[in-house]
Length: 328
Image 1 (cartoon, rainbow, N blue to C red):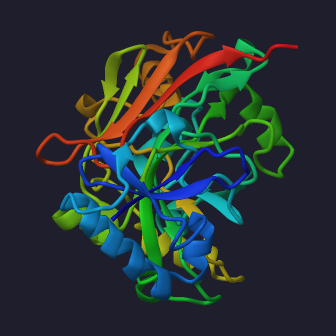
Image 2 (image 1 turned 135 degrees about the horizontal axis):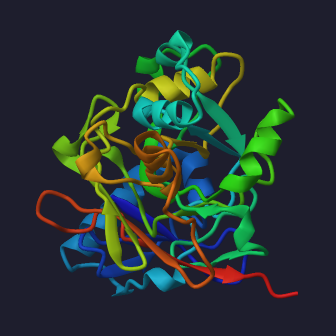
């Protein structure tokens, strides 16, 4: 099934079920007021939501309305936890090669992950509002999952069964703020502003054969100022799948229902598939020509992130954002 959260003036929005073709929706407040409430009691709530989803797709829902992504908040407008991985090692290798650093062997065995801010996510059509272009504004097209309760010490197989929903993310990065922050030895903070998510989150079964091995085997399309710049396959070159990322997160602590785990920038070793973030293109330019020539995003720039199924239909709806200057 497909779920969305609609703007209603509150912090957590209103849960809605969205039709498979993303054309109609139905408010689900008679079942659960918010997505977090549904996740907290998923075994009981999910079958009811799925029944409403079946009625909506069959044209039998009582009060359907036109689905408008502009009304959407992030599926989880705020979450108890947002943790992002870097599961595509090609991306990591390019970044390190561009600065002359070797790839540690441990990176192939132990996932890279960081804890992001989860109190203020952006909706799929919300502007990216920032104070300075000089910060090095970059998009990062990713896949993310929302989990149920995953206990400390869970194995990947155990974690796999707790993946409730899948969605897309734009994990915005401020590239010029990253080096001084990491030099402090304590991770990202100001370099990672609010993350945006796709209009809908879908249950893994909705992906059909594209969901296998704990990965989504479909191309992830990124368009910058209307020009397609990347369409790498999210199921290719993903060194750590989502169950492994969840198990890594839970090595020393529990992950509670509503935790979000990101894949990191989707990247293929085949450079012809393009890029999912500007930094990767700049790294390639540095490796091949000695310096980057592609600039980061400017005020007024747009980014569109979307995943199409084998029939060419949008799975999650599109993230479409414009970079805007913060007004004093």
